[in-house]
Image 1 (cartoon, helix red, strand yellow):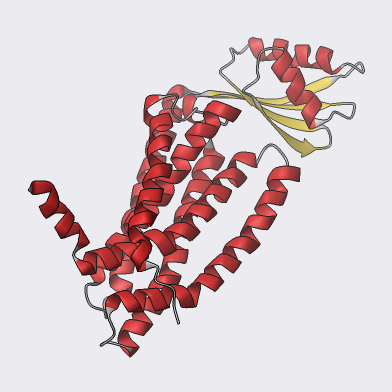
Image 2: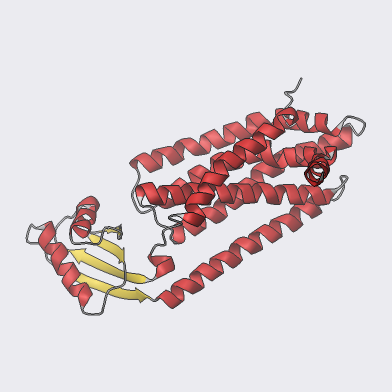
Amino acid sequence: MSLNFARLRGWFFLFSLCVILPGMYFLLVQPGLKSGIDFSGGSSLTVRYDVPVQQDVLRNALESIGYSESTVQDFGDNTFFLRMHLLEDGTYEDVVAQLADKIGMNAQYEILSFDLVSPVIAREVVLNAFYAVIAAAVGIFIYVWWAFRNVPSPFRYGVAALVALLHDVLVVLGVFALLGWVLNYEVNTMFLIALLTVIGYSVNDTIVVFDRLRENVSIYPNRDFTDNVNFSISETIGRSLNTSLTLLLPLLALILFGGQTIQVFLVVLLIGVVAGTYSSIAIASQILVSWHSGDFGRWVLRRNR
């Protein structure tokens, strides 16, 4: 016995729109994604102190002197990597001196390195990131199309996987734009790495359902396609939910108790895992059902009347 997931596909599509459209407002209208130093240009410093310094203390000291959007990474041995907006060659020494005064304890320091990331290089990073996402999407589409070449209409499987992937990316971008407005989250290199990871996870979850659907279509060719989809989802939903749950629990633990440095990466993964699990059941598979049932054609005809 299987649940009739396909009967709810209209509600699934509506729910996704209700999540994506507000996110698109925050993404495209206001305030948009907040660019970090990696994408907007800035400065990086590596500083070593001669006294024990806590990462949170150093972060609070940066905020108190006007660098609230800086990131702090603990390298151990009282050595810290600081990223902040663009500083002049002479300014960074004054900034480090002010930090030492804020920290107190007669802290002595040594500046191990100072580097600049120009806005030109940052723009190249953004462009390369865009190319990476497009290349990943095209590669996934071609692979899914080829992998399901032995079932009827393999092209549809590739399109459905691509739409589910786009759905997950839009959910991540929209929610992160909202978090940038509420919690001041910035887009940086870790965000890009996490987004590419989400793309891979999204396709992996979708392939699990599609692979079982391919088996059912081969074994039961006379069974209605919608029934095959419902059976396939019912047979794989336990695995999908268990896999996602075992991934979500450590992600939540790391977000709550881990360091600030990788928090953006973890938050994007958390959003992406939830979106990917949902889209494999409620988007990718239901697009195949709607396409097979002619829902899209009827919708176009209805709009043209």
